[in-house]
Image (cartoon, rainbow, N blue to C red; front, side):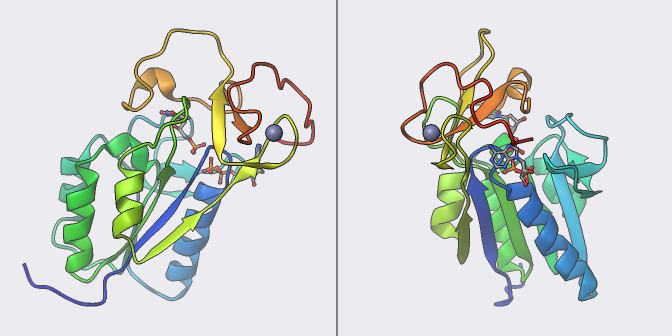
Length: 201
Ligand SMILES: Nc1ncnc2c1ncn2[C@@H]1O[C@H](COP(=O)(O)OP(=O)(O)O)[C@@H](O)[C@H]1O
Ligand SMILES: Cc1cn([C@H]2C[C@H](O)[C@@H](COP(=O)(O)O)O2)c(=O)[nH]c1=O
Ligand SMILES: [Zn+2]
């Protein structure tokens, strides 16, 4: 592998609804305006939006490619000399993403990775914590607590069903506002929170 010093690893993390996808889209649009070679990748598990789009909760979206795993992601990049590779929903790729992204950055490509850094049961959610440790640049965002309006670094499942281990990517965990709420530290773990902060959407 030919090493090139220009690559940077950027991480955008936080809980659900924090604006991670919006920030990823902003960086991608900026790079496109500058005429850079950009690829946007999403995980195939994220089937909430039109196929081939990364979309935010507020409805912004951009064309993307969907891949089921890290191997396919690396295959999609191939030997193209991208300036920016943007990866959304990084939590679904698992820990294999860490060495793969490190190798790509070493070739001179900048990689921006957006994803959840905490699970719905309040544990660090790999691979984001490892990627944060290894990145040149980390942006940690918070959402608005659905109960009190304070900064929310957590989120809570609000549907009563049996789910698999929160730290493992699983189709039954995929969901949006119908299944999860942003919560501050104080209100994380409490039930309720139905419509206390009613202007969110
Ligand atoms: N509790 C909330 N806190 C902040 N934004 C929220 C909340 N609920 C819905 N939103 C909407 O979600 C948008 C962010 O969406 P998105 O970028 O997809 O976030 P993420 O990728 O972090 O889940 C906000 O601009 C806002 O319109
Ligand atoms: C908390 C949590 C969420 N998920 C799923 C739910 C959504 O499909 C995505 C996150 O979407 P967003 O763009 O960040 O809003 O991940 C999960 O798989 N595991 C969790 O612990
Ligand atoms: Zn709160």
